[in-house]
Length: 312
Image: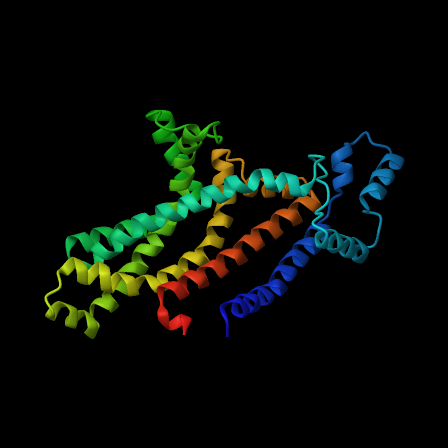
């Protein structure tokens, strides 16, 4: 099967998943008690005003008609208008999405950058004090949730030391990177803890293989054996986990963006849910789902490049 056909097959298999996710969100947000029109107009609105605005947004139609109308709009790249912000959903997502993508990518780079050297060092010094120390550090990272770690970092590095800003995204490249540090650390440390244990386990398995003993017998240096041979094969399962963890980082970004006032799509989703902004919630969930699908496809491609057996 050609690479194009394989990619097309994977895309077609993920389309039903996206449809189910968005459909469930659509039904749940409409079933939950509450009237977004009454919430938007306030207590002083008259019945005629409420009815007129419901008709304007199509909320007086049966649920199945609203559902069909929504998917007709999606087919034409029209995600509707935000009830609260009075702007197109596509424009609002386009403004916020780059911030969430930058935060997630920075957290992944930080997590992988910490985990790979730590996992390799832990495997090379199995049962030594370095291995035990890194194991304890990984356990602490796994046990510390984002909503607890974020405020601690703010108190220590922003308020006490004044090294980093408390919230926002800044203006300009330098200010943006400075504002990005603490949210990325908050989101990336948990990933680093997971990947460190995975890299250690994979490295221990690879270092016990026959081809490693053969490489050492040929007189290769230990660094060449570890990094050129063992690490390359050990990274294959790590790449898969990175792709899967991307979705977890997007979910964790909602909490992290709220803590640091980061203007991303996660914070926008939370605000839309609290305001029962139907179109905006559905658009945000669809954008996150499409991102997750795209990252999984990219992970498969990278995995095939890293492992010749997958290409065959």
